Image 1: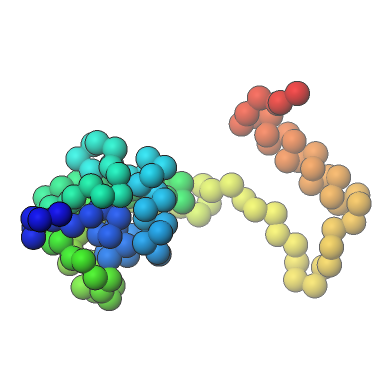
Image 2: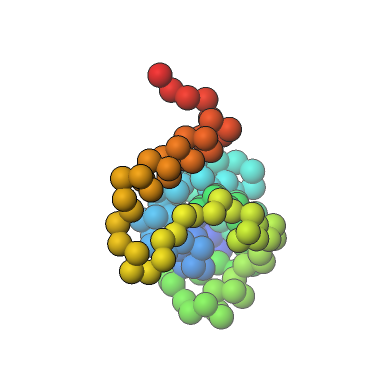
Length: 133
């Protein structure tokens, strides 16, 4: 990496706080969840100002344009200056699948409650994916 105007994509993703750790950024690149200018990126792919980086993480796609190249992790306000976020807004919390929650102090579910929950989840799974046999 002789060019001073570029940096590894995994390092940049970690530096601008798109992912929590550098190893998570490297793993995302290896798994094919990172694209630079619409091409699949290896962890060592160089990014320069003006490149478009797409990152799929936590069921959401982040689309950012590299504004400034940095090599060290910086604070959130400084990191925000290094990119332009063009991501679509996240889906509202109501649109996500509701998670069954028990009231605080209710204890473990009884056998009957557990079976009802399994029946409900089975019904939900049949709509989403075919049953495996």
